[in-house]
Figure: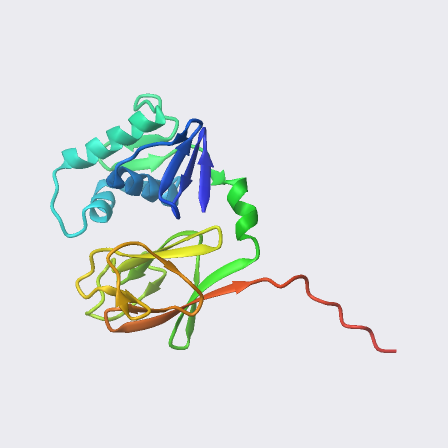
Length: 217
């Protein structure tokens, strides 16, 4: 889903930040950090949560996150003392403080489309934007398997289309029987394997308004 704020559009599906002059260059870590702040807006995201997302299972100094935030502010033309988009919460973390809404160009394309995962007898709806799969508390479905990583993989839904990406899991992610090592587009009916856990990706599209049944006399 494209999110518009100020003069920018953040598109998680195409992994692109666009401004008035076109695409804005951002490092992968800065793009991921901006996505995390937008997802949780207007809540504050702790430094520990951001570090876990940007550098999973890796110890990094606090200066690494500060450099990422500085890159974001430079790209967005934001001022730490008078923030329009990224607010610093001293001693805790950061929050997206601007106004953001779904981009109209994407809204019409996604109308009437719903993406879901089938896992055994369960149907799991996928929301626009990022959907984490794994054993972490913020996953769309908590998968109770020791062979599934906390943040195993993610599915990004944008404008009715979906892409899956492995997040450095120990036992890998497969689509249609092939282990993936880069973001991979999904099609309806694709089988997904998170280690030993099998799921099926489904796309449902509205076929028009409900017909009125003729009254009986």
